[in-house]
Structure formats: structure tokens, C-alpha cells
Amino acid sequence: MKSQISIEFLVGVVIILFIYTITISAFGSYTQNTMLTSEVGRQVCYMITTGIDAAVIGGNNFAINVSIPYFIENKDYSILINETNSALVTIDWGDGLFACSTTTQNITSLLFTPCKFSINNLNGKLYLSTITTEKTKYNLGEQINISGAYYISNVSLKILDSADVVVDNNILPLTNNKFNYSWTPTSSGAYKIIVYDNTYKTLNSEKEIYVI
Image 1 (cartoon, rainbow, N blue to C red):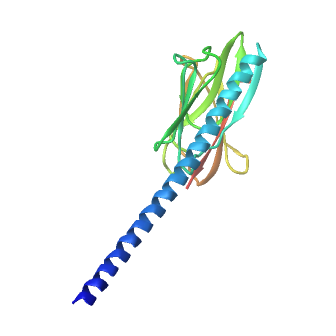
Image 2 (spheres, one colour):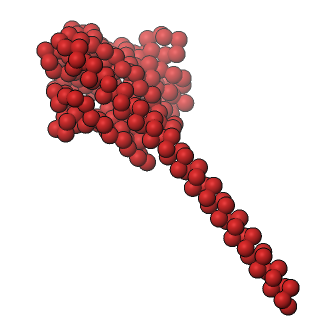
């Protein structure tokens, strides 16, 4: 009887240790992935604020283009610039966020998704010109809603396929320095959206999307 109890006790201990090991391993993997994701979010935030600060230091007519990654650990994310709180820049990827601030408040509040964007200093006011889509990957036949800010005059919008062939080309009016446009792809592949202000061509932006 004692021998049977000892065997059952040992089996129970082994099972508990096995579950504990799996739990610790899973928690360690989750923590490591979270740290990696947070590090990417931090780097994206500092890339944006560094560009903004450079435009401030550069003075009138200074222009710079900033490229940020389209995904954080394969996830879509958004960028919010809040002018009322020391130009606070917040990177939000759903499972977490990271915020950092710039040295200026002379910038308009803006919510956008990853793209290659320009920052222009025009008479002391910063124009951060962007393209925004709801996501980066779309299904074939799905409508793609495209918006953009901040521009001054009307804008030219071009969509190019992976061979750099123009598949859509339009001149769009602005409402409060912003535009909206919708496009539905007819074939799968990678596409590039290019937008530039027709008067101030240094106000420009690019974004890649993928249709599967």
C-alpha cells in the first residue's frame, strides 16, 4: 500500500512539474515577444519625433522624408500626434502602445497609419503629410479607402503596380487640408500609392499595400 501511494505521489509531482515548466516557458516566450514589440514601438516613435525636431531646427522651407515600418511584429498599427499635449506621439499596435514627445507644439493633431511621409516647415508651421489606409493587406475585390493630410493645394494621387505601371491616376481636391479616395483592385499583388501636393511638391507621401 505504501509503495502504491509513493508511486502515485511521484506521478503527481512529475505532472505538476511538467505543467509548471510549460507555464513558465510560455510566460517567458510571451514576455520576450512583448519586450521585442515594445522596442520596435519605441524605435518608431523616436523616428517620428526625430524627424519633427529636425524640421523645427531646420527652420523655414526645411523638408524631410521619414520612412517607418509597415508592421510591428506583423501587426498593423496607428500613429497619433496630439498637439495639445506637448506634441505627444503615440504608437498603438492593439496589444500595447508607446508614447514619446517632441520639442514643439506647433504641429496639427493627426491620426494616421504607417507610410513614408514628409515633414515641411513652412513659415514656422509644420506640415506632416501622410497617406492613411485602414490596413496594409487586403483581399482581392475589397475596397481600399485612402485618406491623407496635411496638404495645401489639390493633390495628385497615383497607384502603381509591382512593375511600376500606373493603374490609377487622379487629381483630388482638399477639404481642411485633407482628401479622401476609394479604389478597388482588380488583381492581386503589391501596389504603391503616391501622393504629392501640386503646388508644394515637397509635401508628399508614399504607402505600399498588398492584395492577396
